[in-house]
Length: 438
Image (cartoon, rainbow, N blue to C red; front, side):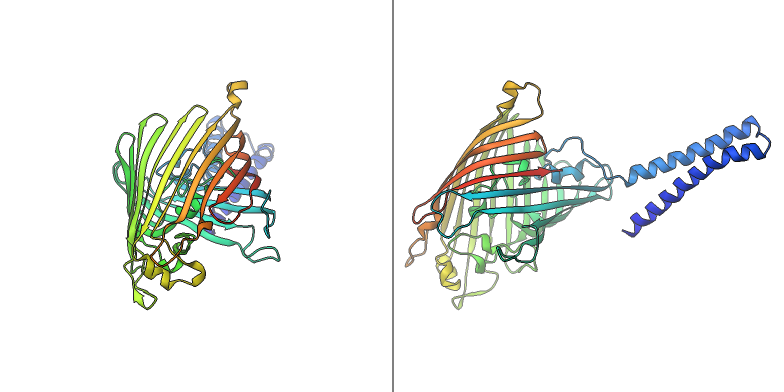
């Protein structure tokens, strides 16, 4: 901030000096003999140099603009802006809001209109090979609670240093997004369908999920990309019958007694077709007592995924499964309301969309995409002996809707979600909202 103030101060001073010179020249010309042609040319040259310096300062102080957002190095398009910058500061971000109207099985639920989040990306490229990238998120419009809802949050979603070495191997260190699933790394609203993220990538893959760590990423062969990190693991004290989401440590004074290894491999076989897999493996006990005993709560999560995009067509599929060792002892260590913690959890979804607007408006930058997504999510697939599964956590979801983009970075969404649990009821939803990225 001090540096920016100093730059602004010098910019103002230089601008004032240039203006003064231009104002004084005519007066000086009336009061003094006309300068020799050579002196006049020299003076004009000095004024031009001064003007060029002012323009240069203005350029350096203006935040860089990116002509086209595109995803790089496993990040969302807006989060990738820093990689397209030659040097210095980059600012980006995204946000979303939605109105959720409960259709049936309402029970005690409420219709909710929420400014879900506003996010700022701040990056700084120190050199051609060293950069900082960070995401700061503001959730639910305010930190404090209201009479209608609990408190929102201000969080750092990621903050890391990249050391760009070679195309095949670059170093990333800091608070890192875990590279599992589609949305955990790329979750900017214009780039996924529906007002709400898929249940599979919320309940099974606990988006947004990050940990402190260090690792490598790069391109091994044309079309073959990887990311792999050593990170802090979950804290199993936060596990429940709803899954592992409550066990995220999220960079906040994380316990480091149990560490983990995570990785991802994606292969673009032909233009538009991506297939890949990702995993997370590590102990989650963090050297704590569960029911009076230490546990060997080794957790393995993996997914296989595929995506095909051609012109207006979008197809996506994902399957994920989680296995937790010593789940019985973990269950005994959590509250009764959170039991049982499952030994196995799984989820899958299939998604299809098509941009129909180019069919009637060839060459348009706008898009209108009907979509449909079918999901299966079960965080109670297998539970420890002596416990019964909570079948309210075994659900099917049908999500259909429209996404309209007046420009590529702004989306207006309308969708209907039908949630059907194996036991109990969940209200269906009619959701509308908008999102943006910059």
